[in-house]
Image (cartoon, rainbow, N blue to C red; front, side, top):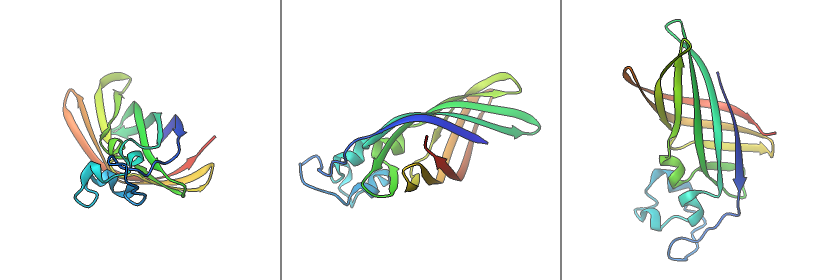
Amino acid sequence: MRASFGYHRVREFDDRNIDDAHRPRGAWCAPLLLCGGGGITAMPISAVVGNERGVDVVFERTWIAGDAVTRISARPVFRVARESHFRTASFVGAIAPEVGVVVRGGTYDGVFLRWSPYPVDYRFTRRFAVSLTPVELAVAFGGDVAWTLSSSLALVGVL
């Protein structure tokens, strides 16, 4: 089970690139780091850092081999939110990790980093969305180094 709470602020989408040319359609490729071979210079400015910025605090509880495992983390939000229902990660959002601590059986067990390079949200209304994370990589550092590769589909409600 995972629950997150956060604060996000959406600014106006800026479709100019570094050379001041308008590139309204290059935002989708920011997490792929390619953008037609032009890289960061071909992306709209809002696709580099994102025009939706904020932070989420994430609480997660799972059971592994009979032990309760709790993860508490801070996830930076740098997303591209155009005037459409779709949102995805910006260039910075694709590489900025979520950082947290792991508590296993009531005892501190280490830290972890988690990346979600290409999450896609579809907002049905201003207060309801579906979020798809096709690939999520987590690396935990504690007594052992462990990694997980997963995906998720979530319903998102906005207060």
